[in-house]
Length: 74
Image 1 (tube, rainbow, N blue to C red):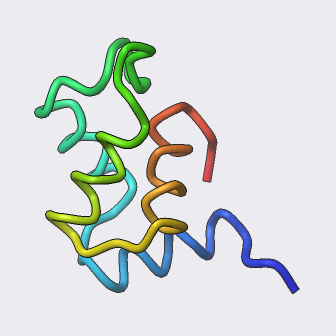
Image 2 (cartoon, rainbow, N blue to C red):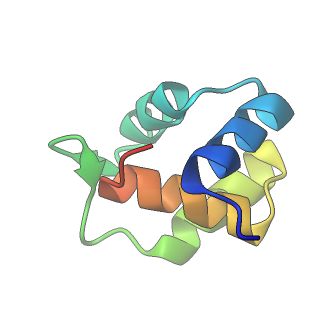
């Protein structure tokens, strides 16, 4: 059984206390977004490193946030 995208986001919120909207706001404050989506010149590895360092997210959870920032709907 695979974990759904929404389940990933729910687990991240339970672990960090941050909602998907919170992560979008934080990414915006770091200038990672343009028109509400991840800027094309921002490397995924940079975002993953930020999420690992600041929120102790593993790779899979960090990639779920990257997908969210790229516009995937929960």
